[in-house]
Length: 501
Image (cartoon, rainbow, N blue to C red; front, side, top):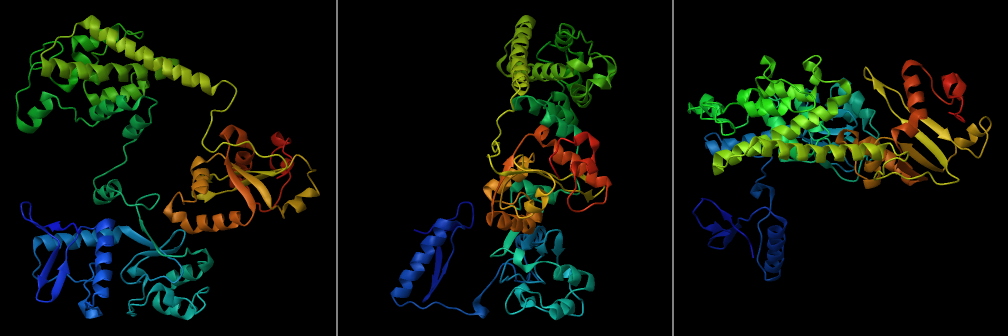
């Protein structure tokens, strides 16, 4: 059975159209419909039906030109097509079919090429594989230099064809892993109007239960549905506040600071805060204060900041729920009941924080997904990669407690079995899943996987505190020009306990 397509809201579902001996199918774009249609086509071929074929009968969505008198709907579809084409990128594979004029593509990490890289005096519809020699392992230098601008041609010729994957891969440029998502498309559409707000980022990174964070985000973005907000948008009358009965008090400023109930809760807290301060008259300022209490000098001790932020978040969340219950259900909460509910919730949340903190200081590292003890009899290789001002340095520290440190360095050049220890969980998880963490390092990642698979090498995660040797060496490498092997005393006298580097 084929699931057809409904052209209009109340119209019938159309699966096919027939005219004399010709049939045209319309189906929803899902795998089940495609499989059913293919099975039907195979059955019709057996029964002797003929199918039209030929380039003159093919209509491709990516290659059709917009008709001169196209409708607004058609123009919208073509704009969507252009948007998708502008934000997609092909990662080149062997025997690539990528068209240099029609698609953005990449043949190496950090290399992005589109039609602007082509010599304006050259018109060609050749696919990318036409720029390789017949054996497909080397670039055709003459063709590349003829079609592409000199600077781009040099970049292309420096890309290694052996690093290509088996097939072309389509990725979404603004997505770290290259996968398309509605969120990634939305960010692309609104790039000009969106900006990175550090306060919003801090809200989502707070060590709170997830259900406590939305109220803070809404307060900071001024989108909590108080009647005062509806007044600004629709001109509605600002109603009475349902917690304390204040006339025309259903506003952001009253909820966060001037309401007698809010003020009473703050005064009875361990900090005894008077929140009627002028600087706390908006949700935006209150959230900044919760995240960083130092915005009001002297109000909160440094050692209490985590506890204070948790208390404030816990307090405002149930207050908003009680306000809604009073408004919609005509209930009336007593102050003592509100206080008890908030205090009980806070003590419960604070115990969770303290228990997690205790687990992290019990002398043993907390279990991680890919944490493993290095296996006996194998080389330990600690790695780290820091960057500064766009310059990076790799720190690789090789350990082997079973052998000496001088003459054995040369022997280590032929290591075939090792454990690579890294404190970067993203990289370790990527190697374990055999999936590149970011599409723009696809070629380098594929090369690394190939090298590791040819030897008995495993990538393992360790805590950052146990990877200090690699961090020291990598940091040293940022400020010193050096390649090759070093002894530990050549790097820093403070780390003489390292066997060899």
